[in-house]
Structures are given as C-alpha cells and as structure tokens.
Length: 535
Image (tube, rainbow, N blue to C red):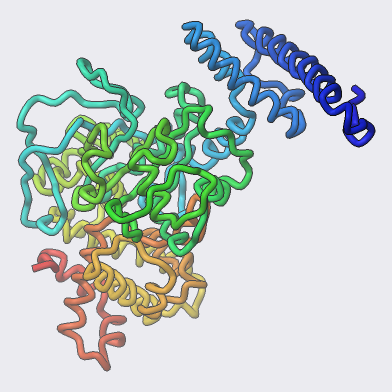
C-alpha cells in the first residue's frame, strides 16, 4: 500500500492532504479490523484450536494490532450482552506466552521435595499428594502437648461444624456470598502444608485441570522478593525479572492471579499507611510500594491475589484488603493414615507404622503436620523393617534424635570406603547447624541467607553437600527464579537442633567439646533421647 508523504504536499493543500490521509487511514483501519474479525469468527468455531504454530510466529507488530482489535471487539460484545461469546474469544486468543508459562510451571511444580533438599530424592506430586483439611476462617480452641509445647499448634477443636474447602476452590464464594473474591489470605502453622496446597493449585492450572478462567498465574514467593527489597522497579519489570521467558500480556485485558507464599518470611516493611499510592504498572517504585498497592487494589484492581502466612504474621495485611480468610489445618485422622499408605509401599509395614503412631497421642497429634509425617515415616520405616533392637520412639524428642542419628549413619555408610572420613568434622558440622538453628530461632527466622550461614562458620560453597548430612535435615533451595535461600525441614526440628546446641554448650567445656562430642555424640543422643532437650 502506497502512503502519501506529507513533504510532497504544498502548504496550501494541507486540508486536502489531511482529508486524503484520513480517507486512506479509514480504509486501512477498516481493512485491518475486517481481517481480524474474520480470524476471530473462525476461531470461535468449536473445533478451532486455542493456538497454532502460525499464530505463534506472528511478528510483534501484528500481535499488537490483534490485541488492540481484540480489546475493542470484547468491549462491544459485552455491551451487546454476548458475555459467553466474549469470554470464549478471549480464552482462544490468550497470548501464546500462556503456553510457555504453563509449560515452565508444570516443570517446576510437578515434583515434590518432601522435607529434603533439591539434591535429594523427589516424587511426583500426583503420586504422593494427600488432600489437606482446609476451612474458611480461623481455628477454634487449640490444644498443646508437653512434647510439642513450643510448636504453634498441634490440634484443633472447631467451635462449630465446618465445611472443608478443596484447594482448587479457594477462590470460589460460599453459598449465599454474592461479592466476588479478589484476595484470599490462607493461614497455617509452619510445615502444615500451605506451600504444597499452592503447588497443587498451580500444577492443576498449568495442566489444564482447573481454574482455566484464570489466564496467567504468577507465583512470587516472599523469600525471593526479599532478595529484591533494595530495588526500584515497576511491576512489569518485576514480572519480567521473575518470568524472563514470557512476553508479558496487557495485564488489564486478562484475568491474572498473583500468589505470594510465605508472608511470615517477608523482610519488607509492608507500610500500608505511609507508602505512596501507585496506579501505573509501568511506574518504578520500591518492591514494598508495589506490593502494598497491589494488595490494596490500586495496582491491577482486577487481579486475583492469594497470600499464605503463619498466623502470627497474618495481621500485617489490613482486614479491609482481604475478601476471604482460609486456614490449612493439615491432615485429619483419615488423611494421616492415607499419607502413610501412599508413602510406604509395603502396606503391612505402613499399617504397623500407623498403629505405632496411634499408640502415642502426642506423636499422632503431631502427624497433622505433613513434614512430621515424612520424618516419622523415614525413621520408622527403617526401624520396623530392620527389626532394630533400639526402643521405638514415643516422643517428639526421641523421634528427632533417631532422625538425626539416621542421617549421621547414612553419611557414614555413603563414605564407608573412604578411609579419610572425618568424624570430628561431621560433629563440628552438626554443632554449627545447631548454632545456626539457635541464633535464627532467637531472631524468629525460619529462612536464612548466605550471610547467616557464614556467621556460624558454614561454608556456603559446600552447603549442598554439607558433610553429606544436611541434604536431609537442611534445605538449600534455588529460588523458583532468584538466588538461594536455606531452611530446616520444619520449625520443630530447628527447635530440636537449637536445644541440642544449647544443651551441649552448657555441659561440655568449650576447649574440649568437639573432641568429646566426636567420640560420644551418637551415644549421647541415644542416652538423652528419653528426655526432652527443650526442658
């Protein structure tokens, strides 16, 4: 098509030229719209695929034209009250980046790392996943047991009958609720399964099984946002940092969900009262300002938000910013049994483990925490299948002691052909972990960064193979997108190591503790396993 060059037109003919330009513009725009409308009509055919290779290769300019025409078309269809037709067309024309995003999220979330590091054994989530007990609102009366008194909660007694919620229904309104739900706050104690619920939700979406009315899901864990707390960045730039492979859509045109997992791990101030108001997703600001405006609805008011948190940290979010509060309660009694039967392939052995756990009320109560189920299965599977002479653990301290001994033995067996294995070094490593656990517990931290490890004399370059021991009791996680963060398998195990560190620091002379500890550590642990180290 030949366009008119304004430089070739005399000044006296400007009006005539302008008329000619707009006449040609009208023909061009009408032609573009007609062509796109023909494609839209074709795409609305039931047997037309959601995307094709040809469309995926459209140049950026053509994609921008299509997005603009689509926006107008959807607006007019909805004005005509053709809501279903508009929604179908929007779904069919969801940017091709959705397929890339779904593929990447499937790869990230299809496997589960049960209480262990990324270097350890993984299991497909669908093979091991056991539905967790989720309810709306907070819990009723909470009961505590002696062995677990330092854990936030162990059991619950609901005040009234509660209807459980499936994880994929977390954004669905309950009967009688007419207000659409934009933001959900999900509470739950450490290790109760909040992150696994999020993982299952994302995986089911990425596999096309549920919540397909959502076009894009962006998981943004707080532990990774911490790494960007000093940056000034726009929301679109932030998303590009986390999802570099994705050509980001026009966020106003699609249903987008942000998932912020682990509010209790957030190191941002979240100053809802004093932060500036921000409404432009392309305007730069601190990550804290971005988050508070996103949560308040100033940024992307149509976006869905899901925040998970331990109960103590949940109050950081103003109540008026939350449409629905849910709580992950962990496993109920049938779900505990289901977990062990899925986790242990030998069903006779699984039944023996279940019987033993039920014989100790405090241990069975603790089993509502999925991570504790995994630790118990790890210990009891070995002890009951190998007919060990050692007493089967009946308390939390005994269970953790046997778990630590088991990991030390695994370390020795792995390197038994290596005559240079250094028991004293292994001991020092465990002691350093205890020191880390104690110091971070005093600060209220469940996650740590490289500087925290260095302060306790832990070499960050070797942490992933830290004496071959810590791959099981200490997690090194490559963040989904950024940096590295570290944590113990559960708060209660961190408390156990901290208590062990404090106990040994008190009874052993500083100049001799490593030598003495090296020769007697396992015996000492066994001797003390009948007593609560936290006492």
